[in-house]
Image (cartoon, rainbow, N blue to C red):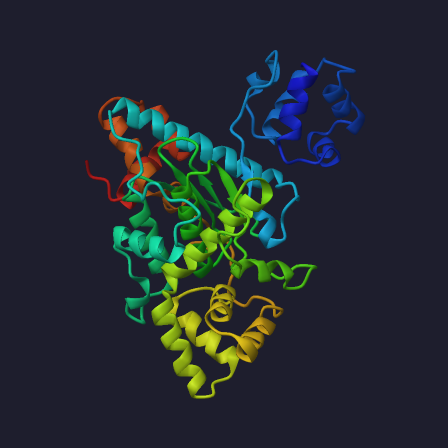
Length: 405
């Protein structure tokens, strides 16, 4: 095993060397020896455990040199998570999303389908996120705030997800640690894709989905985010959150500031899409005129717009000023009450494989798989591999996806 290859695969896995050594049951110095070239030999049982732990094919460890992989921009600085290495679970989820994206691209090419997304083009940081949000929500034909009060955040999220996929954009989900990454945008290749964490509440997921949609509009390649509107106050208090509502075009010109400008732009875009300024301002003024307590106002607004408490609070700060804004700002230091949730489970207790497949891969990808199989572009074994279900579950997935082609 070449040391360059060993360093590439192990360093990019998200595993700490000490934890990995314990996981595959070998001494830490042996792993360090593989990475530094002090020893190139590795036993087959060790190699299989190593490859299995870092979710890589065994064949990759036998290459002469590392492969070039797509780079991912880290946009997490505004949420206080910048510089922290993603966990191995997060790395594996990102790698799988990229693999599914490439599989979708191959299937679409084989069936001569367009991979181009049907979203806005030519969007730059100097474009008003408010104006762009209005145009894109019309394109999506989604007006969530006008939905009946009985509509749940889950229903609205699923509706939004379906609308995004209708524009030829894949939307994947995975149980990513929300303290590290809440969402990712993959615009480096087509079809474009978005990855959202299932460990978030549906209110926060709606924001993350639109935030990542904003990154696709800006066409800045692959990037991982932890939108400040969904994040918790970190060691710096609300200093990072303060930067959330700064000028989205500030810092344009390259380097870290340009990335920060993109992150602010996407936050403003998502906020305007879910909480349109005119309607939000009217609602908040009505409650303030009645002398309603700030916490109660935020609670009412969050329920009205089906948004997370934190996103709603920051939007309120942005819409007000002076003493009232300070009152809302103090609420940022309180722990979140509804933003984080556990992974979906069926009421009977365990995850249903068919439902889990649809939840993780989305209807667009699943439908592509069945369509490609129908046209004999992929085999039944490919269907099983791409959906990660047993053969006796394939029809169940087909029915759950509503695919009757």
